[in-house]
Picture 1 (cartoon, rainbow, N blue to C red):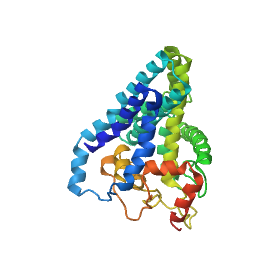
Picture 2: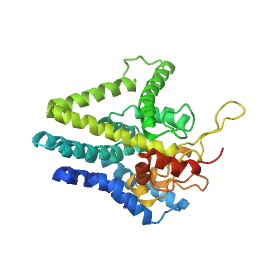
Picture 3: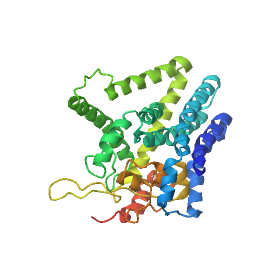
Picture 4: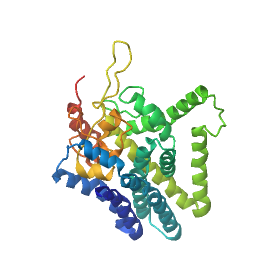
Length: 340
C-alpha cells in the first residue's frame, strides 16, 4: 500500500489549484523542496525481494490497479483545472503556479505511468499508457521509447542519452526534437517492413498526430483560448520533466564498441540508479532504472538493485533540482561517471 503515496502529487497539486494564490505552488514546493530534504534523512533501501516475494507481487493484481487508477485521476485533474481557469479571474502569478502544478501531475502520474504501461504485453494496458500521454503532447514517446531508446541507450544514436558535460537545456532541445524525428523514422521502417500504408489504421504516428490535434481542438471548443494555453503549457511542463529525468538517468554513460563494430548489449551499468525510498515509491520504482533497462519487461513492483549499477548520490527529485544548475550538476556528477 506504500505506492498510494504516488497519489500525493495530484493531491497537493489539486489542493494548490483549488486555493490559488501562493498555494498554487504547493506541489512545486512538495516535489522540489520537501521531498529532497526528507530524502537526505530517510534511509536508502537497496534490498531485493526473495523468489517467493517476487512471485507473490506478480500475482497481486492490486499493483496493476494502482496504475490504472491514474487514468481517472489525471483526466479528473485536467477537467477540474480547466473548469476553474475558465470560470475565475486569475493573476499571471496564479496561472503560472497552476500550469506548473498540472504539469507536474502530467509528468509524474501521466507520462511516468504511461511509461510503465507501455512496456506491458496486454493491449488494454498499452492503450491506457497511450491515453496518459495525450495531455502532455507526447504520444510519439510510446514508439520511440520502446523501439528506439531501449535499443540505442547510452550510444550517440540515442537522443534521450545526455552526453558528458552536456547541460540540461541543450539536452532538452536534443531530446525533444530528436525523439520526435526518430519516432517518425521508426514508424516509417515499421510501415515498410509490414507493408502498411501511410493512411493505415496501423500507422500509429499518423493517428497520434490526429489525436493530439483533436485533443487541443476539443479543449479550445469547450473551454476557450485561455484554457487552451494552460493545456499547452502544462503539457510542455510535463514532457520537460520527463526529459529532465531522462537527462539524469543516463548522463555521461556510454556503451563500449566491440571489435565487431557493434555496441555491447545493454546492461545494468548503463543507467543511473537510486534507492532513495520516497522517489522510488512516488515514481513507481522508476528510480531503479538500471534494472528496468537490463530487463525492460519486469514490472515495477519487482525491480531490483544491482551492486554494479552506478548510483546517484541523491534521489531523483534532488537530482532534478541540481540538474537545473549545470555547474552544480557537473561538479557533483562528472567525477562519478564510471571509467570505460
